[in-house]
Every structure is written in structure tokens, then in C-alpha cells.
Amino acid sequence: MGDIRIRPANLNDVPHILYHRRAMFSEMGCRDEPLLDRMEEATEQYLREALPSGIYRAWMAETEGGRVVSGGGIAIVPWPGSPDFPAPRRGWILGIYTEPEFRRLGIARRIMETIVAWCRGEAFGYVSLHASVDGRQLYEKMGFNPTNEMRLYLR
Image (cartoon, rainbow, N blue to C red):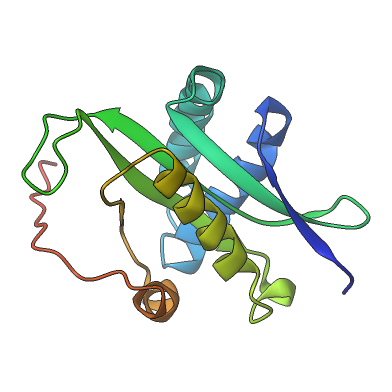
């Protein structure tokens, strides 16, 4: 399948990020098309503001021919410090997705390694993510640990 290069995402990548995010949720079992449409609209609005401002960073994996086959990013949000990380921000890794025919080639790992290296360079104390069943094994191999996060759905 040739060489795959990892590069920072830009506004031109918004359609790829939206496609990957929708495919990710669909593959995890969400089949409600109107709900996916609303999620996609909200995500596009977010990305068009967050990518230029730097509160969302993303990286894309593309083939020699320029086909985007994988990607992922990190949302950086203001947050009161904690004993683990006293800085006033947190990072959540989001949307790690690889096209089905490019899976099991180490591309998602390369995306993750790129994001983690960027976070280290930015002096984050830790980063978080929500793992899908398929992604959990990769994240555990990379040293991610489960936490005590809980969720209450309000609707």
C-alpha cells in the first residue's frame, strides 16, 4: 500500500475529519442518521473555529497519492488544575479512525504516537481518551490506563 505519511491537519481536512468521525460512530453502533447528521453539523462548526485557534489539533495519515486513510486529534480545553496536572488545561484525544482496508498496518499507532509526542512537547501532564472496544487494546499497549470517570445522561 506504499508509504504513509503523517501530517498536521488544516481546514481543508475538515471533510475528512467529519467523514472519519461519522464512520467511527456508525461502526460503534450508532445507526440514527438524523442524530449523526446533527453531530456532523455541530462538529463542523466546532472544527472551523477550533482548528484555526489551536484548541483542536489533528493529524492525518495519507498515502503517497494523497489519499487520507486515517486521522485523529486532540481537544485542548481550559480546566482548573489538579494535583496530577496543575496547569489550567486538559487534553482529550478524539476521533482516532482508520479506513478499514488500512487497518492492522500500524497507522493508528503512528497517529497516536504523533499526538502523544506533541502533548509531551507541550508539557501536558497526561491526556485522556474514550476508548472503543476496537481501540482499547492499542491504547493499553501504549500505556493508557482506565480512570474513574463516570457519566450521567441528561436526556
